[in-house]
Structures are given as C-alpha cells and as structure tokens.
Image 1 (cartoon, rainbow, N blue to C red):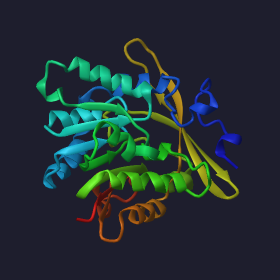
Image 2: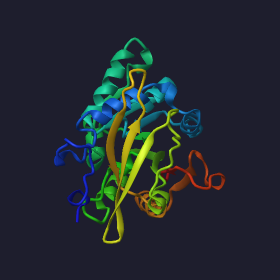
Image 3: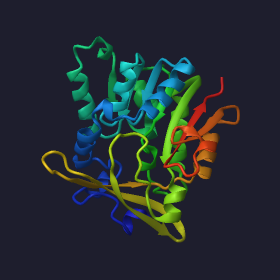
Length: 287
C-alpha cells in the first residue's frame, strides 16, 4: 500500500501529483531561501569537510544534483569550482536563478550553470545541455535523497537513481550523499534538534509511518521561529527512512566492489560520534 493512501505526506493544499516535488506550493522554498539563503548560515564544519575533500582529491567540476536555492553551489563557486546545479523543483530553482542574477557582476559566476533535471533521467537530462561531460564530484546533501519515496515497495527507483549518479562521474570521481539517522528516529520517534548544516535552531514534530511492520515514511513538521516581524513558518516534508545498513549496501551495489566507500557521522569519523544526526557517505568511483 502506498504511504500516500494512509497518511498525508505534504502540507495542506498540495495536490497529490505534487508529491514528487514537495516544494510545489512554494511555502517551503520561500522559507528555505529566507532562513538558509545566507552563506554565513552554513556551519564551518560543513564547509571544511566538503571543500577540504574536494580539494584533496583534485576535484574541479562539480554537479550539485539537489541544489535547491543554490546556497551550496554558491559556496563552491566562491571557492573556484566549476559548478553545474540541477534540481527537479522549479520553485527552488527560481531562487538559484535569482541569486545568479544578483551575482552577475562577479566574474566567478559567469559560468555557473543552473538547469532543471530529474534524478530518474539524470544522465540524459544533463547530457541535453552538456553532452559527453562527466564530473569530478556529484553532491546530494542536506538529506535530499530521502525525499525520494519508495512507491513500489522494493526501492527500485532509488537504486536506479543511485546508478544514474554513478554514471555522471568520471573514473575516480566522488559522490557525496547523506541522510538523517533514521535508525535512531524510528527507534525513538524523535529527531535530533541539532543541525550540522545551518547555524540556527529548528523545531521538529516527528511522525513515523509503519505499514505491515515496515517503516515506510518519516514526516517532519518544521517550525522555524519568527524573525523581527514575529513571523513563524511551519511546513511539512516527508522522507523515506533509509537505514544505514541498507543504503550502504545499495550504494555499494551501484558503484561496484572496486569503489571506495567512507562513512562519516556529522562530518566526523564514525568512531568519534556515538549517535550522529546525519550520516555522510563519500564514494570514489573505480578508476
């Protein structure tokens, strides 16, 4: 049974055909831009982790496949990377396009490419505007991959998308992909309030949907405190609850046994974090 049949996985007012784009009503996109649109809100640990590994491996051309409002892509552009940013949500992309326009006098932004693309057809979509181009790194961060729900009950679409991510990489290229600690969330029914990406607090109401004994979906009702005008923002997003063990196996299947796979907790080695809020996978495609 599809989760949508027994639970409302989106904010009120979004039609069912909008499930694939949970930002379709524009509410979450506006809030995302308002509260995390400032590069200064990015934590230093996150910047040091991502940029450090990219430079360590000599990466130059980066594909951001869940660019949203473009804040991470801008961070990479500022660091001198050649960035291609895609997203399936036109509501989010309009903020990225606006950000590029506002930076039009900065020559670093002249070659920042922003396009709409779908993970299920990613190599074809990217090839339509950059034929034959492969990337040194692909990033899918901020718990973005978990937006893709398991509509068939066997994770076939998720596996297909992971294979597409691998196809976009050069030999030796890196995939950065993360997810919340859903094992902990399912066990406790709560979401850690700390944020490893942003320097501001967000309150969550966490719901776990279990169908026939299997966790099928986690919904987070976000409540972001008001600004100087005392305006509060609330919206709902739903996620597929990836277990660490299962997603690790799926990534290894997509990349093959010759690839290298490192897992971090909150941007630190797993041995240093007892109960991380996020797991970050870094895979190196076989050369």
